Amino acid sequence: MELQRATITAVAHYVPDKILSNKDLEKMVDTSDDWIVTRTGIRERRILEHGATSDMAVQAAQRVLANRGISAEELDLIIVATITSDMVFPATACLVQAKLGAWNAWAFDINAACSGFLYALSVGTRFVESGVHTKVLVIGADKMSSITDYTDRTTCILFGDAAAAVLLEPTDEKELGILDQKFYSDGRGAEFLHMKAGGSLRPASHETVEKRMHYLYQDGKSVFKVAVKGMSDVAVEIMERNKLTYKDIDWLVPHQANLRIVDATAERMGIDRSKVMINIEKYGNTTAATIPLCLSEWWHKGLLKRGHSVILAAFGAGYTWGAMYLKWSLENGK
Image (cartoon, rainbow, N blue to C red):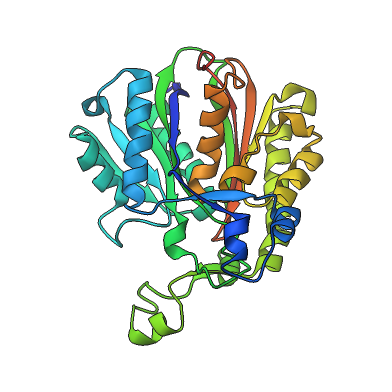
């Protein structure tokens, strides 16, 4: 059976109003604007003061539906990529389904940390390619401020809150849409990036709360080394599999974890920085939201155009990492 091609037919994002700048962080921990910018490229990040991850996801989803001109009841499937679910259960995607009124869709979450959106986009693509579904909503959303320790100067400078979403549908245009993908995992990296408590291994207790074990933990140096290699290696692999050179690529859309990782990936691919989507200075690391947030911003600015060759690449906790190659099919945004 010949597979259908899946393509992105709408994209949108939501970021909270509150801005937490590097100057603000200087008042909270022992750090400085210069130190943060030099090491990460981040100048500010957005913080959701009231509400949960599902609230941001719904905002992004509603904008996608409006952009596409369809109702929530036309959706077949909702996939939410997040590590900051509203609750341990039910799935945040089910909460989004209810808030949207998407009564004809089934829903589930994917937890792959910073690679989450790409994992979810891959799964959604398979449902469309197989002909099972025709309208799949894929959302990357994280309220990272809810699991960030603002007394830890090594991690609190990195993260922000946001949500972004895309709609996947089938297309008859074989030269456009999702063309290739490759993913990896290595559970041996779990010790370097995780949350120490809150799961079945260490349920919440007075001790875990007192020891601040319900916040994100990261061994920055260890993660940085493998992230640079993993993200750049898989992006180059996608290029080689599809016989692409740097001249063939219009945009690299990397996960926005650290500007040095982004630059290293682009350099390895031979891509000039002018072809790299970078917004980390405004939002920090919004985990599952970073890649669709870039896609949405660039499309709405009219910079991401129909026919553009795009490579998406990410690396996250797990370890998880991967890349996708697509030809953008949406008419130019404004």
